Image (cartoon, rainbow, N blue to C red; front, side, top):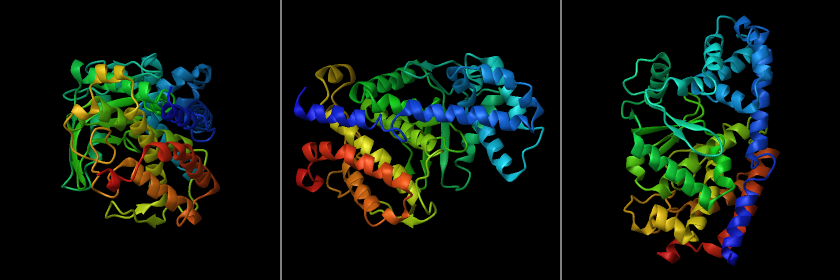
Length: 383
């Protein structure tokens, strides 16, 4: 292993072992503990949950994950947490309806068991793909309605879900394998926080959607546009990107990131102001994507034989692409954006961070710094 490869391997390990933000198994253990404790609290007000509490207590973490990483059930559980906090949690509740169905569906997840076709993906944690187009199943209809809400705010937005076929499943499977080959620690660590993958074609006011995380409406799900991405290298990058959002979302359940979460800042590559929390989430992604790009530059020839040479693909330039960046633009690469955000978050914006947020930023910056210094030059010099 040459010196550059050793630096990439060291950063890959560093980004997957930090206790609060890197170690995905530790983060997920906290998530599972939160849902176990939540079920106990819900039982005090929801008889339908109380009746199932002995079964829930007996579940191993793997099966608890199947229950609570289901998009509909996780949404209902998070609603229950919010209602409990506000004093509004009361029976009847959707959680009482969904939990018995989810337990009956094991070892599959509730929505997974209702798909028109079952598409499972091989990885360290189980993933499945949405196949709901044309289905009249109640769970599929609820997922469709939740997806449609993403685009309801603006008439300029449009989005459509696509049912996967065998070729699409293989593309996603190949991309997961490629990500795990290039970043054997940080890649799987991000994907552990993903429950399901859905395919879409979508356009928002800001442009074509390449990928997205489900957020509050469709938790545990990431969306990717295979057609727009077109190659396994960039599909892998988008899966990493969205998995990282979910990983930090899970970590932030137990560690505060900002003193003033609603405070806004301006970044030079977007014409809208971001919240400081969004800037932190973006920095988390750009650091990892920079390392992913470095790993791709050093990829074993077997990667090219199996997945094709990145330089051989025709792709629209964008900052998060491994295949094609806009190097004429000052912030046209993930490394350029990572440098900017790291400097600002540790400098001018640092007063907006909580101690946990500053810990996160400092860890990310110090993990990437040796790789940045050794492997990346200024974009304008390269052009």
